[in-house]
Amino acid sequence: MMALNLTEASDLLFNAITDSKLFCLITDLKGKILYANKGTCEILNFKANDVLGSSLFSFLLYPSNLQEILKNQKVYQGFVEGKTKEGLPFYLYVEIIPFQRDGKEVGFICLGANLLERGDLYSLQITTFDSLTGIPHERGFSTVVNAYIERYKRPFSLLVVDICGFSTLVITYDLSFIQALFKEISQRLKNILPPQAFIGRTQGDEFLITLFETTKEKLGILITDILDCFYNPFIIEERVVVLTVNIGASSYPEDGETFEQLFSKALFALKTAKRKGENTFSIYGKNLEKEVQTFISQKEKVAKLLKEKSFIPYGQPYFQL
Image (cartoon, rainbow, N blue to C red; front, side, top):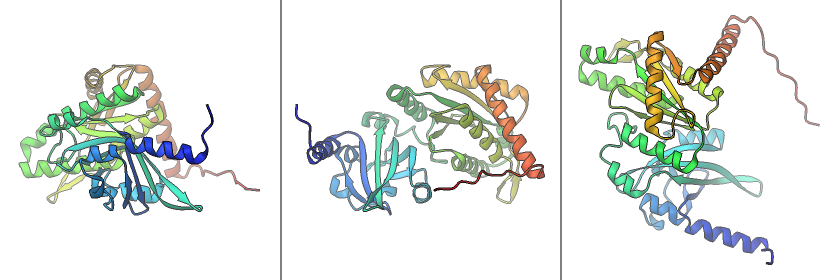
């Protein structure tokens, strides 16, 4: 078989992408859509002519600061959430990278895989989103996680974040206050999540977080960030509320092969954390918990020394010859 020349190979690749079910967009630097393949149009349920010229950020709603991320970091790899023409949610795992022309960045290429089929979207449309916080309920969350497992089978961690004493707050304050507080809590959590994380909530006062492509260092950083984001009090309607949390975590594939199995193990770990007191965490599987705890302790020691100016970090000079 004869080798293809560059033009022939490019044509074959373009035709394959055009007909693919993958989500593929090309935009300029401001996010204006210049190209959309058939897979993108099917996911959005728009015709190509309706998509071209529109803003990428009008379809992709989460993360809400995606435009700022691309402006500063240039590359995004992780979850995005959006709405179809009918207002149904869709979830993609994407990579958005800049491309150049004549050595200058001129736009972005967005490639991603859809995690839910259209039939799943219709069955979930009523129960998927929490109208108050805009994040998925447990049913929608579990469907996305199980779809990720089935498609990628890559290690990840599942965290359950419980607000300590939230039931007491519900009794103490009126509904509008509780709703405003819960909305602020969800926003703080969204703000500290890395791109590889996905957030939802249970039927109670618990938040669900998956951290994909995880390592013990990444898990340790996320747990620290969650605890830190509750350090400052919440000010709602001129009232000050100080909240604490407990965190339980489990890992795929060590602790289960489905969301339901992982959720059960994370809840077990959460109960263990609650026995330790407020602002604590527990990870199902003692070896990983010990490793993460060691990482967090070392991180805290370095932060304390820096704060006390006990040592000054020096960088090795780097010269390019």
